[in-house]
Amino acid sequence: MQKRPLLAIALTAAAALALTGCSAASSGSSTDDGKVRIVASTNVYGDIASTIAGDAVDVTSIMDDPAQDPHSFEASAQNQLAISKADIVIENGGGYDDFVGTMLKAAPNDKRTVLNVVDISGKKAVDGELNEHVWYDFPTVQKLADRLVTALSKADPSQASTFTANAKSFGEKLTALENRTAELKTTYAGEGVAITEPVPLYLLESAGLENKTPEAFSEAIEEGTDVSPAVLQDMLGVIQGGSVKLLAYNEQTSGPETEKVLAAAKQAGVPVVPVTETLPSGKDYIGWMNANIDAVAKALGE
Image (cartoon, rainbow, N blue to C red):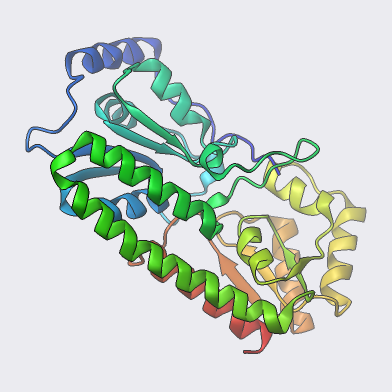
């Protein structure tokens, strides 16, 4: 599904012009201490970049507050300044973080490398619909890691062997995550699940689980539009009808409809698996995804 953009950038025309001028004056390819600058749209990609690059980079994550509702996020002049100085920018793409594209246009730099993760994934919209939450798709994250090694090695050739070694270690941990979901698939393939939004859908699908959520419900929640009474009843019927093993609930966005679904799940004894769109405090990407798989496994009865 196509997520609505994370709102427009809160910059005045004067501020944008000033920052563009700053970019032109500081178009060098590293910080004063020699580190490569990376700006990531969310702390998910910021953590992955830090893991692969180690101490050789300076990483800024634009959206890094786990309490922040991504749907209401507004980028700032400080974010624009970081983008203007970046050597590498990581954006999710797919309509998720369009504010990054706007800031890139405000500070053009043909030496900057931009990694669009949806583009890297190779995933295409089907009938106009694309699940853009590709950081829950482990093969996509591996592709991103490979592209990061290339971009980092170009920006700092002296550290290329370190980047390659770090990415190899990270890739082994990604493979372990894939193996865990494959193990769940051998036992639970075809079991039904429900979601409030398609945030964790790639992970659930890799475990062989089948999404039973009425499409009109999850689409309305994701787009921030009203859920009709009939659609809400359909969703509650799914929860109460015994056809789902768990409800995956996006903790970062909630409203009256999702709260009713959550209450129905608890009343029906359907396990709830909380998920988030950004990295929780104190977690790295691998630890976060391992915890998500743990929660799914527990809900399934492992």
